Every structure is written in structure tokens, then in C-alpha cells.
Length: 114
Length: 115
Image 1: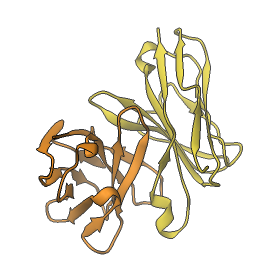
Image 2 (image 1 turned 180 degrees about the horizontal axis):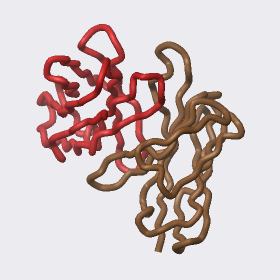
Image 3 (image 1 turned 135 degrees about the vertical axis):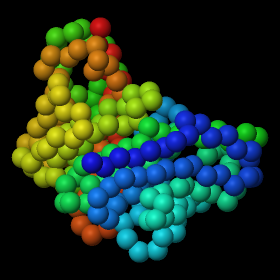
């Protein structure tokens, strides 16, 4: 069975510092991996995805994520955090057997301090 | 404007009273999905649809029904709501085709309270 783990409920980082939000996964076969962001009182927005190809994936708002097959991780990163990055971040994995089944993590709240 | 709409946005109801949450998308997307969001549990997929008249169960389908009679609409039906279905519900859609069918577009959410 597929699963996704986000080990940190909350991450605090100072504005201007690099940020990392962690995600590990378990899936049989090749994973399709995603990051979504939920700003306060708003819906979810797609940030980036890894389907195949380069292990370093670039997405919206300056975010990137690195796919590491040996560590089964897909951590979200940004070189310099902004206060406006404060939000709830979800990692997700999609079934790669031709279905549309998604498994989301429990979410990590990012707080960027001015 | 390209969007996913949900109605109602807020609903308070009583146990056992049937309700429907509508979802509509104007992007001609093939894939649609329903999720519920609960604190500490993240998002969990309830049902999904890969085409008209094609639906399948996600992780938490018990107590819910869906239908996909038209491409743009994917209503979520609670035949006999119970308090444990109190949650924030999201509808999402995505296109089919090469790289495009991996990005989900989410609706604004429906906050449901069952007393």
C-alpha cells in the first residue's frame, strides 16, 4: 500500500533563511510525487511534481524539491523564505498503475518569522 | 475564469438528513475527485472519476456516494450524514494528457457540520 509521511507538524524559519519541509513515501513501482500548498482560508494550490527525469524539480513561487529514490524522500526546499510563504504544505503520491488514487500526507505548517 | 466551484460553501445539518454538495468545473477536465480534510489527518480521497460514468473508491468512501453524469459535474451525496462526517470537503479536477494530468485544481472547499 502507498503511504506518505510528513514527520514535522510545524516548521519555523526566519525570513531570508533557507527552508526545508520533509516528505518520505512508500510506493511500489515508480512514484508520482507532488507538493501542494494551502494558504489561510483558501483552497489548495499545486506547487510542483516529480513524474520522471531530473531529480531536482522546480515549481511555483521559487520552490523546488529533490527526489531521492534511495532515501524514498521528496523534500520541499526554498533558498530564501518569505513571510508570505507561511502556509500549510502537503506532500502527495499518486498511484502509478493507471488509477487516479492519491495519498496525501498529514501536512506541515510552515511559519516564516520576520 | 477557469475554476472549480462548490456549493454550498458552508452547511450545518442534522444526523440522517440527506444532502448533496455540488462540484462543477469549466475547464473540460476528464478527472475529478473528492477529498475531506481533517486536523491531523491531512487530505483523504473519498471518490474519484476518470471519465463520465466512471467512478471509483478512494481511501475513505464509506458513507458517501458520487455520480458523474456530465463531464463538468461531480456531486458528492451523503445519504444519511453522521457527526463523524463533519469535515472540510474539497473537490478537484485535472486534465488528461501527457504531463497535464498530474496537476489538480481545487475548489474553495465546503465546510460541513453534522449535529
